[in-house]
View 1: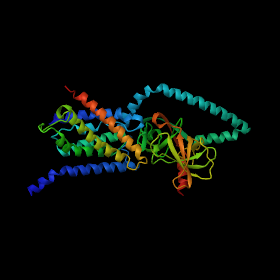
View 2 (view 1 turned 90 degrees about the horizontal axis):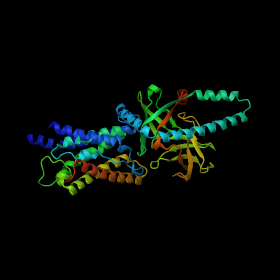
View 3 (view 1 turned 60 degrees about the horizontal axis):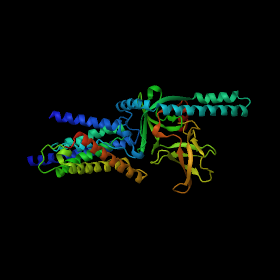
Length: 168
Length: 277
């Protein structure tokens, strides 16, 4: 019971550190920074209670917000995908999979897992950038920021997942 | 009854979801008012400590460029003071009275040096955190400047850090004027390019040229008059057609700032109390 939680906590802290110390300062062509935090929520296992998933999402978002000065934005976006993750995972996971499936390339299959990540990340970015720019003057700017950040995050997450879980 | 309770608990995550989203929304709106708690901003001690440590580490990597800029700036200022001193001596043979006046003006202004601990330029409402707080004499509403011009206005202070509303913030509005003709207006940033801002409310009869210098007006008393803001890049009509809207090329590149000074005007309270009457 306690070991998986500690493991998840270490994983979350690692990703948050990378996000705060490095990624928050990277702005490809001056647009939105890649966001790695959603990966913590995306990789929550299948058996987890929905309330627990929501609390994980909110707390991680809150920490990311405090360090980035974006109070409420990350927490809202991560809570949202924590709400959406279990049903999407149940739908996209292979039929014969474990009760406690940990989403990754090896457990879900390469293409399946990529679709799963891309979909949840898209939800996250739509909420995040809608909140960040809900009274923004330049609609095109916020849209380009979202697109650049989305692609950068997706590439980064795929790389991280390959390092974490190398394919045979 | 049992069935009812079971059905409720099966949908409890909906309630939690809504609760957490509402909580996020509250944070978002509270934060937008700036006067709210600064606990959820980068100026809270834990976040500021991490950012300061990080800023120190990265500062070493940037020292050569920074040094070069300072030296350049120094030469420029030396040159400027030299030529100004000559001009002043020529204009006023009896300079003792003027000098006295200048000195009393400068006595009212104290500069508090600080380093930037955290900075953002990509949001709609950008904020900075500097490592000088109430212990160093910083108070809300004080102006922050760098060697190249205005940076922002202090919004909140903790004992060791201050939160600064950058000029790259949709809530920022700085009273400014054109150096050549003295027409005044307000400097606003509208998102996007970090080097472009807009000066609004410039009357239609003003004669403006591209390249005119824009500086602080000194009306608000947050900044003394005459601090460089930028140059006029484009002249446009305002949306209602009643005034000009000038596109300003800002003098300060907010994305690579490190050293700033907080302007502490000792007479500000006196002036503000006068305004209230």
